[in-house]
Structure formats: C-alpha cells, structure tokens
Image 1 (spheres, rainbow, N blue to C red):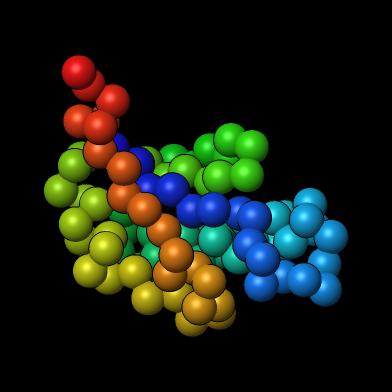
Image 2 (cartoon, helix red, strand yellow; image 1 turned 45 degrees about the horizontal axis):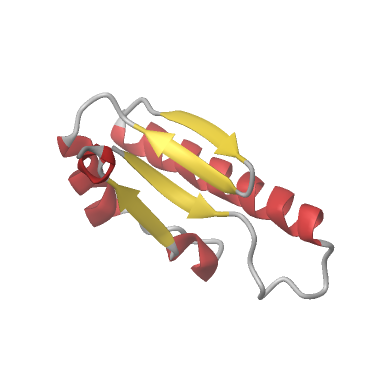
Length: 90
C-alpha cells in the first residue's frame, strides 16, 4: 500500500508547472514530517514523475494516518489516494 499525492495542480496558475510541483512536494514533506514527529511513526517518501508517494511498514498505519491527517498549510494537501497493492494483483 501507499499514499499518493498528485504534484501537478491546475490551481497553481501563477507558477510554472515545475515550480508548483516543487512547492507542493515541499509542503507535503513538511506536513508529513510534522505528522510523523507528533505520532512517532516512521515513513518513507518517494517522488515518481508528478506524484509523491508515502509508505509505512504496517498496513494498519494507513487507516490511522487517514483519520489523523489534518494539514494546516494547504487545502490541496487533502487531495490524496490510498492505493492498495491488491489493485495490482490479478
């Protein structure tokens, strides 16, 4: 499983697409760092093209994250998908 944030956002019209993606990735990293320290949970991050993925070691952490994720800085940070690896199995 992983949490996926889209880095390309049409709401950032005043910025170039790469600048908007970098700004959004930075905001996600700051908020995830704050969240991780608050609850003492380790996570991993990976950026692939225009998506930023967050993973945890235990599957139950995704439910906890979804219930406690409340970013202060940007409403756009509430646009995420939790992707299950069951979606990739046939």
